[in-house]
Length: 185
Image (cartoon, rainbow, N blue to C red; front, side, top):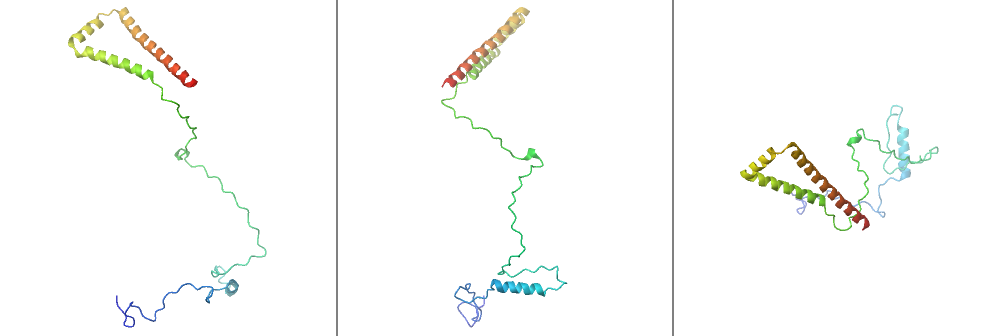
């Protein structure tokens, strides 16, 4: 930065004008009044020749246009058009209106079906593991299955299917009793 010999404090020339605040109402200003600007706009319009007929003349910033004598009343506001459907409706995100679920009252019900079927599965797995874990037991079960007559094999299958039906019926009765108890509460 170079300093000026005229002003050693700030490095600017003493003749440089400093920016001032905008004029207030008490100070004179150079603003153009609307009437004067309208006259200047008319003078500019009359100064245009036929060659400049395509030129658009913009009046100064302070000019207020005079209302035309044959002006039409303002048009009524037009309601906006509804949004058009998307071209690919499967891409639009729509959230279906789902009614809220009622708040549960009390503790959740015990799922007896899961408990009983889980216990039966554990018992079957434990029995299978016990048979397979010892070669003597595995040989005994193999001999038993090999000596079954066709009638005895059918009886075993009927017993297994009957056990599944009985367990399912008992669990259905327990489930119905739980539903009835919840409705009464």
